[in-house]
Image: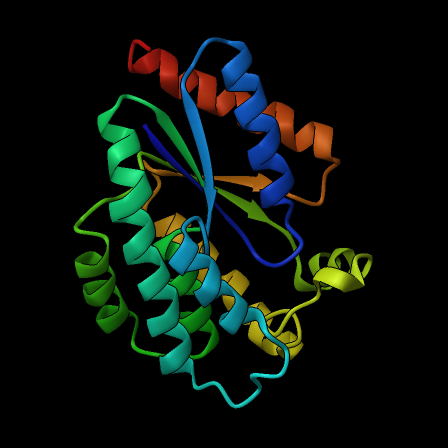
Length: 208
């Protein structure tokens, strides 16, 4: 089963991914948690370029292609082999982040991005996508509490982050069978309780 966690900056995806992995392992599942960009040696190198605050001249098209390069490596090197082994893969961001950030945020053609993303991922799609929804103001305020991890994407103007949030919500509305929206302004424990229930229910439906 392939589960992706999506959301704006400061929505709590990374923390949630770790807690979900621990919960599922304790229940006897084989679980593998990865993140985007990153998750492989090459992907981590790409991540460093993408998030470097000195790279202020990076074009939206360049940004998208770098995310796609990291994603291609992750899918073939990690995601597909783990899924084929029967593991549950939890992914902190996937292709929908590119549609939200580079498509809605930077206003690139979403249709074009979708076609390229399908090629990049070899058609691999999520079985369940959890959107942690939070306002840009709240999310960025959370991010500012940890200045060491503040990055180039965090520094975009607030209207960019508003478009990203709108993009995520549009994607969720258009794919109600796959997407589940959770209010990420809640506490970490409340978010974990809600999402773990969703995930366990989905696994139960699949008889696993």
